[in-house]
Structure formats: structure tokens, C-alpha cells
Amino acid sequence: MRDYAKVSPAFWTRGSGKRLRGNIHAQLLGLYVVTCPNANMLGIYYLPEPTIAHETGLTIEQIRIAFEVLTEADFAHYDTQAEMVWVPNMATYQIGSELKEHDKRRLGIRAELAKVGNHRFVQMFLDRYAAGYGVAPSDSIHSHSNRVQAPSEGLASPIEGHTADQGRAGEEQEKSRSKGASARGTALTLKALDPNWKLDDALRGIAAECAIQDVEHVFQKFKATHQSKATVRADWTAAWRAWCADEAKYQKRDRMRKAPVDPLKPPSHQAWSGRHE
Image (cartoon, rainbow, N blue to C red; front, side, top):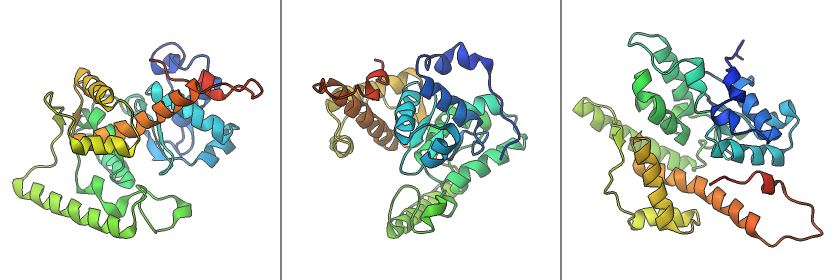
């Protein structure tokens, strides 16, 4: 447990914190994920919903709705299956935007990432901080044996929900890739999105798995967003898969909002937690 955390007063006046105005549950959850006992300097950590409910007084439904608002504001992202949270700007406030070459905190960052394993939040973190912190994908970060597991899950499977056999297969693939990289004397390379990248059958298949509607529009939005931010990734197919998973949540909520309203049924929380275009 940390002794303290840095929380900027600007939370209330600008940026993603300001965009949470009018949603008291999202504001409470936003402050909680920055200051809670489980949090760390990277902002990637294990946080079960029952723990959030116990320590904030929010219901599970309120927590999930609030996380949707935090995700839209890019304040925090939550993986329900893995029970993992990522606060994108946490490292900026707790560490800074850059570290010098011999700063010992670089080792601490790698150690924390190794605890999480190859969860998509690690890749999202690296997209944002790899250059400034001098870290990149490596064996220690993607090690199968170092993946985080919930205490209640025992040792049966990693957080991605794969079977043990799938996990071992993935481990062998990681070892094979790392040997190839070692032979070349380089680690995995972060690269910008190819502007000529096309929506092929494989990418459409990923979208279909998530039941994405209007795939062409979603794909163009994906490309435009990452090109405007000059995002770099080691695996753009994995980035597209994560985007589709988030988009599926948005589309589901939009369909619920547009559904016929029963005049005898109390209004849903979805009405005030909708996404802003």
C-alpha cells in the first residue's frame, strides 16, 4: 500500500477530470482509482469490483456505468474479466513524462509491467510512455509466468481467460519471437500506423467477433484517431482488436438508449451516462 499519491487540483478545472462534471459517481470513481490502496505509480493494477463497491459505497451497476464514462473521457479503462484498471495519466502525475537514462525508477517500471504480463493495458501504456521512460516490450514484460492472477482464480489460467494449454502455446510463441529478436540484437519495434492499411478479411473477422456494426466507418475512425495522435504500436492487429472490444460496448449502449421507452419503467442510468460524440 502506498503512503501517499499526487492528485492535482486541476482535476476539477481542466482536462478529463473536468469532463466528468455532472456525474458524481464518475467523479468519485475517478478520484478513487487515483488514490485507492491498490493503485501504483503506473496506474495499471488489479482492482476487483467488490473491492471498489466496499470502499466507495457504489453499487456494481453504478461502478460499471461510471467506468464507461471514465473510458469515454480517457480517464480510466477497466477490464471486467481480468479485474484490471489502467489510469492513462497516472504515470505522468506520479513519475513525470520522462526519465533520465540512469534513473533507477526505470527498473521499477519494468518490474511493475512484468507483474501484469501481456495484458493489452501494458501495450497501451507502452504506446504512451515507452519513449519517455526508455522501456519497450521484452521477455520480462511478456513473460507468461509473471502474469497477474486474481487470488480467487488460483493457478488455473492467465488473466486473458485462455486455457492452460493455450497459455503454454502462447508462451512458446513468445519464446520463439524473443529468440528471433535476440538473434537480430533488437527488441520488438514500435511503429506508426500504415496509412495504406486496409480492412481485410482478418480484420473484418475480428470486428465480427465483437458484433461491430458499420465496420467501414469504425475502421476509418480507428485509423484517423491513431494517425492524428501519431500513435505507435508493436502490434496494430491487437490494437484493432482492443478498439473493437471498446466499440462493442459503445454500440450496445447506443442501442439501449434508442430502444422504445416503457412509460411504466423507471428511467435507466444509461440516459445520463451516454457517450458524447
